[in-house]
Length: 205
Image 1 (cartoon, rainbow, N blue to C red):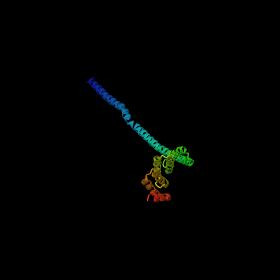
Image 2 (image 1 turned 180 degrees about the horizontal axis):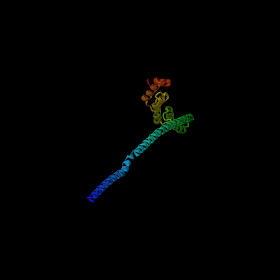
Image 3 (image 1 turned 45 degrees about the vertical axis):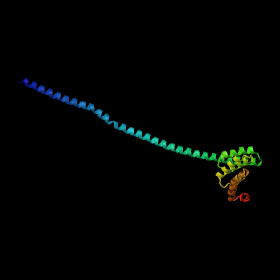
Image 4 (image 1 turned 30 degrees about the vertical axis):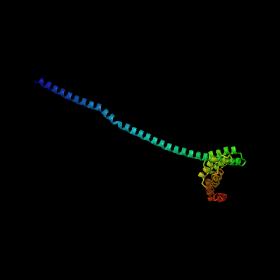
């Protein structure tokens, strides 16, 4: 019995030691797994960095859009000022060529007058008097059809251009078209052109 008891005691002791070692091993394995948990939790700073980067990108794009709007506005203003300058230059050129055409017409230089009046119209196509001058040039060339076309164009741009109205009456008279001649004489008379009133009273009554 003295021999058996110590053996049993030793076996019990070994069993206890093994049990403790297993427990320690489990603790060690658990500790080895902890870094994995820490690693998964480390995503949070990366997520914050990603959100900051996205926010900065969007802010940059927003600023670029604002800058583009400012540039577009600036370009529009530059184009508008350039357009105004071009329009002013065209107006001055139109007046210059108009005066040259009138001077040519007074000297009966019909070809030169036609060249200059066309340049005037090209620079300012809305000037009623330019078409009136062009109508006179055609009238002097005995091209009555084109003369009427330009006189009527002058009237369409300025209905009170009484000289163009009177010229229509005269050209229709030359074409022996009494009805239209009297129609335009009457219109010119109504606009206060006294010679038109005299012509209407003499030939159309």
